[in-house]
View 1 (tube, helix red, strand yellow):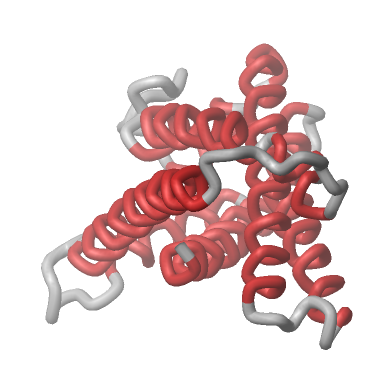
View 2: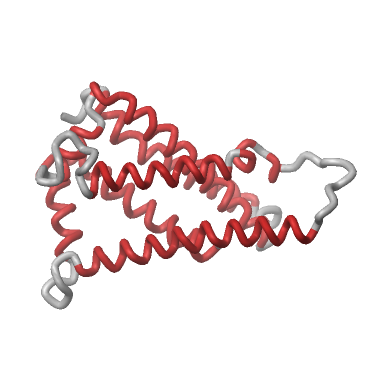
Length: 209
């Protein structure tokens, strides 16, 4: 769970940094997208490294989901009888209660996001358009409902990440010993959430055209 989660966190940081290049203009954003497909060439085939990274990402997501299921079953078998009294803790916070539904929303969002931005099937501009054109078309004002779906999904990702980081620190015994790490986890989650939201909102409200 921790290893796959760490891989996904690194991916989110890199993906957010790439998305923010859209504020530098179409040329910069399209150049970045082209560079991703040429990394390692000619040692590797065209798009070779990117394909390997995507395959690794799929494995990390599958491992993360599998780990969550296994741990949930182990917890249920470890205590088949419920506690006589429930003690309120941070582990019972809003983020924890929405982890499962949040995971479902994130799963469907990832599928749609791939169909929209990667394959262009669900994008008004289609697959032949430039990455910049697809991004702008995907969040144009007329498609405000897509932006709303994106915002909800990203907020769920932020809650999921915040709880995951806190749980990791708690498990390692670092949360109480080093409170600054808990604050750092919250800050990273907030930064990623904001970083992913500014792009679609900027397009929907006409800042990026």
